[in-house]
Length: 209
Image 1 (cartoon, rainbow, N blue to C red):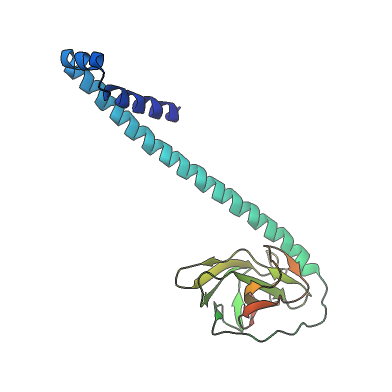
Image 2 (image 1 turned 135 degrees about the vertical axis):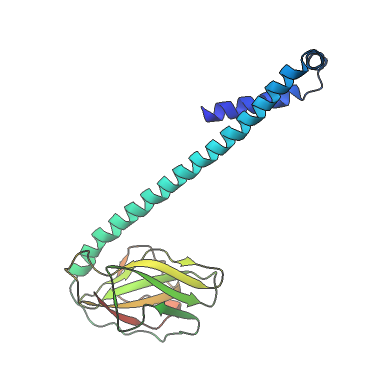
């Protein structure tokens, strides 16, 4: 309905602006009426545009919230599977390049919550950064949600350290960031080893609170 009023207001404004003799005669005969119509149309156009913009913002916020809730539910469900995978052979890390890619928070030997922001820096802000979490009592290497990167190279993502609740408290996890992995990664994928990549950060070891 707002779109209809917006379009009609635009048509009225455009119509009375046309150089048609009949319109010009009406304008000379009823100038006050003409200006009242035009001003009303302008106000209606302005108000409907503002309302449509607000409606679009609300719909966008709702869509983003729905997507985030769906993703959160997916990762929480996937965390159960990750923590139930048995322990395998320890996978050695390839050489790290911490001057190119760093994890700055959390620090090694610190504690984390079930959900925790991982923050870091990368030399190239256009780089494709991924974070992988390895619960040390399992053989799972879990790809985390997509990383958000700032123009100055600072990056962050909200990661999952085990299951919600107290079940995984006290357990140890390793965190690794990689850039341009050789194999395409996707959110939530469970790998059997650390992914090979062009650049890697140093591994950060943390304990779940």
